[in-house]
Length: 393
Image 1 (cartoon, rainbow, N blue to C red):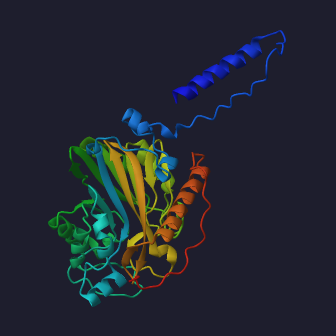
Image 2 (image 1 turned 120 degrees about the vertical axis):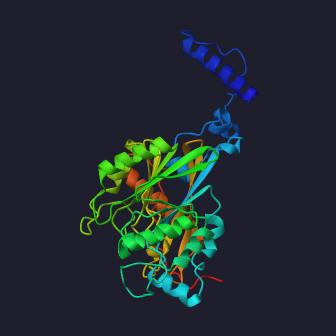
Image 3 (image 1 turned 90 degrees about the vertical axis):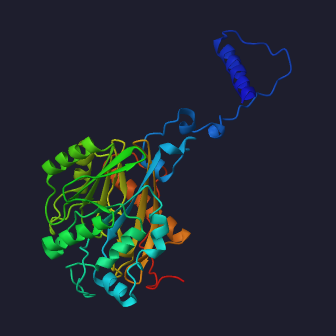
């Protein structure tokens, strides 16, 4: 590198002399071939993180094409893993009862899901003993109380209960569910109190809000974030929001789901949230980096029986990595649901297609919002091909 710099300096001096001369130079000697200086190659330079100990600013490019090398001290990292909708009702409940196995939906992914400092999921069904088994097309959901063993198997630490189906069996169903979860050491968000977890000296605070069937109360949202901020170092807000079966976040005023998730997500960040988690659309959607903070709009179904389309069978598990209190990285692991309720991780080819879909959806959103995209912007893959109903052996 020192030789290369010396050549550049010498060339610059020759160029300056030529430009500064007003008299022609006599050709008194042999012609010498010019020295061609190759472009500077910075691939041998340490990354920003290695040079400064600090991660670069969060961006879509850094999320989908990371360059940050972790500093030597791994003790500063904390991981938050987030799943999509867990609905152990209807067909999931039926097949678990037929199998006499309430761990069945969670087994293929449990080892991965529990391998994080905090695992945060969205439970969209009350759980209690005596839940009527009904595999039919009902929209009144409940699941057997024994599914709580599946949640503990996957290492669930916090479960969001702010959604449009938890109340399907009234206050009694809600109370039985919260008692069941708490008895198994699982905290809840969305019912008022902030769920706080201390991970090696850094406190995470979790709150949740439902915007399906009604508008989100912005006064309560702002107050909830302020309360969480007073109790925690990192504030995580989960929303149940947006139009179903769409790749882009949008309101659905016919349901009604009147709020625009983009507006609500921005409000939450402006009012102090560190990361925003979205669910409900049943398809995974793109993400956004807003004022240096991450907004995830939907992770898709995780445990559910919606086998009627390929899009509703696919989802992503997000792992969000913090360096101190700053989010510095995200990874998404994709899966497909088989047998009316069991997610199984995709093969590498299908997984690459899912992540390309997610990146393309993120870029479409960023373009609409006039925010930075990834480069180059990937094309949006076509609809996923049909997959067998039964899981591969």
